[in-house]
Length: 550
Image (cartoon, rainbow, N blue to C red; front, side, top):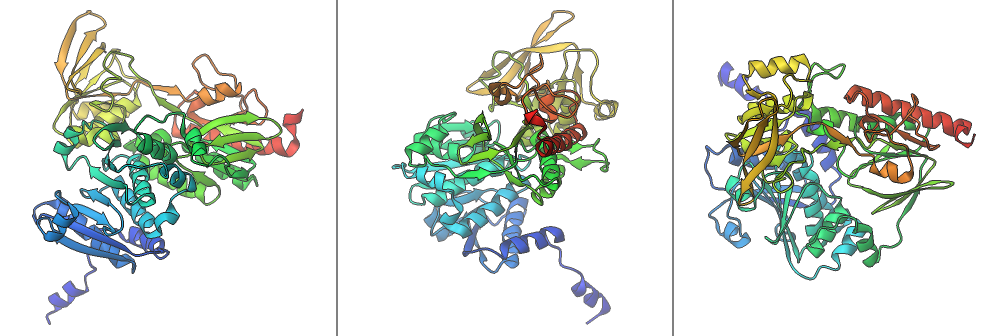
């Protein structure tokens, strides 16, 4: 053997999954309770990078866990015909037991959903909550669920997991399919997908966005919008009695403010729980790149969220997909969700803010059909297409740069003659030669056959109105505080709807605090983190000294 051959053989194998990820997954998979078989189907086209990625990813997972077995099949095989697989790459999980498949390569955030699906399938029905199981007992007809997702969407894995849980709970009636919308544009167009996660049930019922798992189960059973009826549905299914958990502090919202509050509360000796109706991270999770957080020259928004969440989970319990339905204040602060009742001594609102709408005709009609607020989630679907982004702040310019990087034909529409965004972002926009329509507003979003086809624009100085042909409209015109729950409780709000607090993050109601974007002011990650720490420490101080009784 030559020296060159020896050097080549000793060279470390090139893995698809990085070393740190392999170590983490090996530890996670060490506790798999049941066997998982991954049947991967491809058309054999070696030039198709999605085929290669999917096969390698599945095979490497099998090498990391004794209880995972990967088998590769041709798309024109008898096995594919038997299982009804017509698109590749596709991966089926425990095909003999469940109807669960991933159509397309599990890239980016989708890989997270894929790994979680493996864990759920391994655990079987033990992975499904009692509430969901009882709700699905009412199901009598078959349901075919397709969740369209995108590699850049942090909300999509949660919706995919909802579908997988239902398929595990009711394997004879529910089939779940996660579709990479970027890989299968024709299928996405067939189902009118313009924003992800997009869920279709039985080719009849559509929903856009991430839901708590109980609401997902109710909509699966009823084929109707289940807003505000989850608890009632659970009670109808025999789940009228909910677990009661006693804690010192309930933190509502798992963005930077809420996560930080959880760390500081637990370090102060307060037992706390962080609840979020969606996933951890808030607005940061859908920010492509963060360039102004101390300690990081630049960092992906989701990467920063994962670091914050991992740190918080070392101390506090973080509960995603658990929406609060009611809060009552008495001797204890009672917090009701669709799953639990929390009896707390104090409460922190870290509910953040949601995207502000333009309020023009066509915006609601075509939301999810070409109108979007999330460039990270939906941007890839507009590759090679023409879109506008409306706004002039940091978010608008950051998203415009992200879309340009994805290959989207992007134009910025701004109602003023100057941006409010940081100068560095303005300079980057100019370097990338992204055009800007100054002094311009959107008067109407146009469309046909359920999809955006253009917009009517007006120059606010000249009054000129003209129409432009478009495939999409991204809206980034600021945020509206999520303060409705606080208002229902009697918390005082400012004129702009933000929660009024003092320097210690105290509201007008004793033992109730607020932090982060929901309090207004400078909406930055660094200020939200500071607010969260202050709110938790104030709660500790007040509970220790019984200040609230005074």
